[in-house]
Amino acid sequence: MQAMIYKPVAGSRLTLEQARRYGNEIQRLEIVRPLDLVEAARPADSPLHDGFEWDDTTAAEAYRRRQAAYILRSIEVEIEDKTVRAFLPITLKVADGGTSDGERAYISTVIVKNDADYLSEVIEDALKELRGWQRKYAQYTAMSERLAAINDAVSKALAE
Image (cartoon, rainbow, N blue to C red; front, side, top):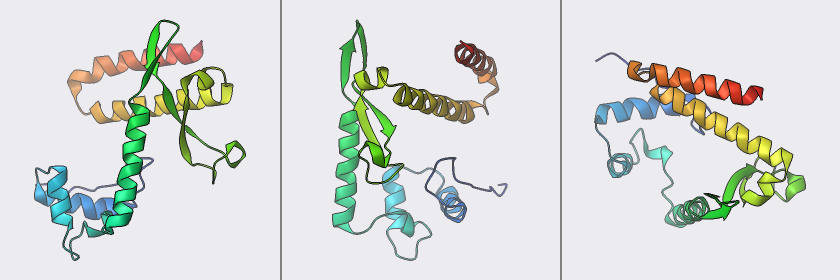
């Protein structure tokens, strides 16, 4: 098998060294369920060990935060005869009540619709997600026409 050179996805918290070390270990494992990865990382000498929080109190708190984010992502609201997500993720500034610039929070869709800065951020986040989706599927030639159509549609929408 050809040696793979792993790197972190744009926006990831992984360092280049971590992405390479983790990627090589995961490749060695071949087919991996998340539970398999946790078990492989459990020994202190595992190349994956430092990728996990092993303090149960800290891990439990982090898990509850993920649950809270799941709840915020899972609620819809009907606005003007459309059902949309009720809360959207935004980046707080200290001036907006954040504890530090760059802190993520959720805000009502109604507020986003009526605030140009928040709306611009949500649109930019959507475009980042779309670019990520395009990178994910660009390797499949069967998707090339669809990806080109999406690029055309986005370009037209941004030009308006």
